[in-house]
Length: 219
Ligand SMILES: NC(=O)c1ccc[n+]([C@@H]2O[C@H](COP(=O)([O-])OP(=O)(O)OC[C@H]3O[C@@H](n4cnc5c(N)ncnc54)[C@H](O)[C@@H]3O)[C@@H](O)[C@H]2O)c1
Ligand SMILES: Nc1nc(=O)c(N)c(NC[C@H](O)[C@H](O)[C@H](O)COP(=O)(O)O)[nH]1
Image 1 (cartoon, rainbow, N blue to C red):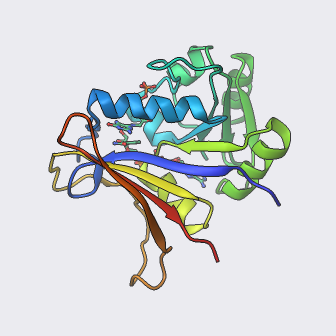
Image 2: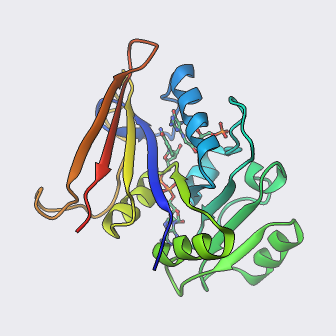
């Protein structure tokens, strides 16, 4: 089945953390944020996990650049934990789809739908991310997806061999603990994980951050 091209973009400390142990996650400099918004403007959908919405309350709009359209916001939230006050729900600048499972509260589903949000139930206990991408492709015409984390969602997309490209900015900070860029049960050796191919390395305009771009080899 066809699926969209999937790019994961994050910023990490030099020890690979995208958030500290207290959930602090502002790592990108203004130049890097602008670069992130350029990617937002180039995609049809932006996907994040529930914890990223709960922690950061992002708008997920490409507002730092001139964009032709606002991409669809796709929130993966197996138990419908995100608050009804989240900007992805209350801010109507872009459509939002929340993807959940049969575990979620039906009342909350109804409330969300009343608030103009599309809710997709796609799985008994876990959302099947490949199905979500195929549905986005076939029903919404989504050809390119930007994934903005967090670590657990990133892991699932890597594990399921769904991600096509990784753009990781290394910022000049150390957290020593917290959420890793890719956070899951992990691979025992380099043999089990995906093979990455370096596409480009750039020093950010701020002079302190390094932007790594890797494609993920298939098969
Ligand atoms: N620095 C950065 O670039 C950056 C980017 C994004 C997020 N963050 C930070 O990362 C942290 C969040 O990361 P995280 O790893 O804790 O969470 P996450 O954002 O990856 O969300 C994980 C949650 O999403 C839901 N989910 C994901 N996949 C699912 C599936 N297949 N089925 C059902 N539900 C699913 C579940 O509720 C799960 O608990 C936050 O602190 C945020 O600030 C940093
Ligand atoms: N590339 C990147 N660098 C960061 O330093 C950071 N914190 C994120 N995090 C991604 C996550 O989705 C955030 O919540 C949004 O970056 C905030 O999104 P808004 O500007 O509010 O739309 N991403």
